[in-house]
Image 1 (cartoon, rainbow, N blue to C red):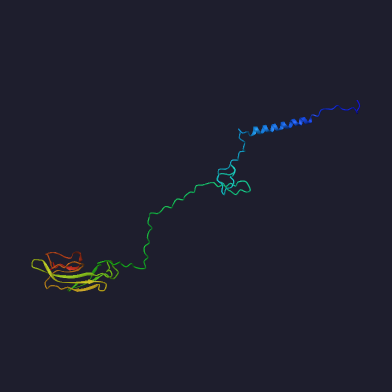
Image 2 (image 1 turned 30 degrees about the vertical axis):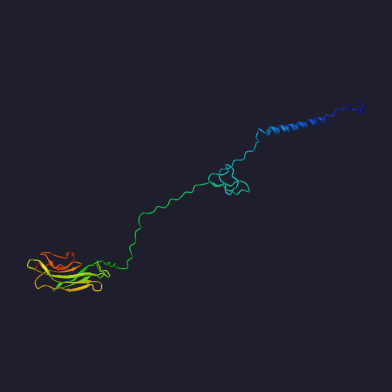
Length: 234
């Protein structure tokens, strides 16, 4: 056979084949779309990564789960995040200090020398000269060396009274005198008026009354007597 002989015509099947592939590819794409997201089947949404339950500060992104050690501060990844999750703790209240119920000991007042006795209302009167020929001297305490000192502005009543015996053994008043001792005149040298006969006499301090008569054997004026003689030795 010579090279110049014409080759019989062969039908071109390329174009019809391409026309068949295009509809098939479109049908496959439509079928895949129908199966992947149909009206009766919800579209698949990628699950979000779980976040840490710890609260974030300043509204930043939450830290990934398991990225923070309990009790420690965790810094989330990411160049723009500034939130630092902090572990929440309950504040502990300190117990109030116990109050002492014992009163503090008071310090004694400082003393610069010997403490002077304080005054006493109706201060004491002392006999500084005993009965001698009808003379007796008394004095209220103003020296500051003994207790029961005479208070400023106070007066103490002092008197003497003498009696003479009667035939029945009683006694009647013979003479008396009253005076008040104060800081201006704290002493009194008294001269008792005595009867010619023997009889009782009394020097007294206080508000006692002076009786006009005494029963036989009676001793008047109680504890107010400073110096006395009942006359029983006569």
